[in-house]
Length: 366
Image (cartoon, rainbow, N blue to C red; front, top):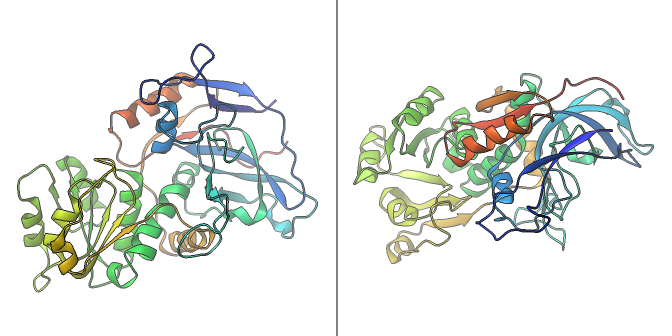
């Protein structure tokens, strides 16, 4: 029977949020069969996201012990349902749209029950940390041919989140040639892919980090420069790094929250945008009167629509962008210790890029 990785309760019962760390467990699951317009996909790699760590800590809504972990995955279509329209899917290497219920509305999910992300919750019964998965043919894109399995698995969730935060929220004008974009907390998957998208679009990109090594690595990926956000007055140093004639930033892509509005108000142009896709520093942040007087927009951004997913994948293909992979575990789903080591790196915030497990060669048939 196919294998899958779940989290398991301790002593048969749930723990207290934030005070527990659920162990990983491998289980055999029934062989899935595609119906109607569904595809059966033999998965070959999956990538971790912070939500997987939060699930193990009971800090994510809808936790389920009966749904495999992970939303990011790549694999090969090995069987078609009887109602699949595109018969050419069979044998194709594909990546999965990491969430459902959001087709193309620019404001948010159309589904009355909300957006459902794959992996580890009761809202969707599927996850990508398993050998086989069934999804509708409308929810996959052919994997970019220039990407390895590890790189392809690293793309979906962070790529979609970064694309919406940069393009849909900060705006195409604020992320194109001539624009200056600040991306905070460089090193995480979303920040890195947003950096790559903005560089490919011709924007001048700057970064912040507490690690000079991560700033150097970002420069190697195309960033113009960066600063250590723990230094006093880092925002002034950033302004001094802008090209001659450029007096302010057009947009900030932020995953931390905290004092970003206060700092951002000092360095953004009038009418500039702060696009916030996460708040790792604090779940609250002040909105200042100076920000109002400067007409700065603060926009929340999370995940993205099916339409945005396709746009993102097409852009990756056209520009031959490769997601940054911090570490790849070449193993099998039997290697619980190896998987735990990936989670340990995420807990310690050691990674620069995505953490991926490659657990099966694509292309084999049932």
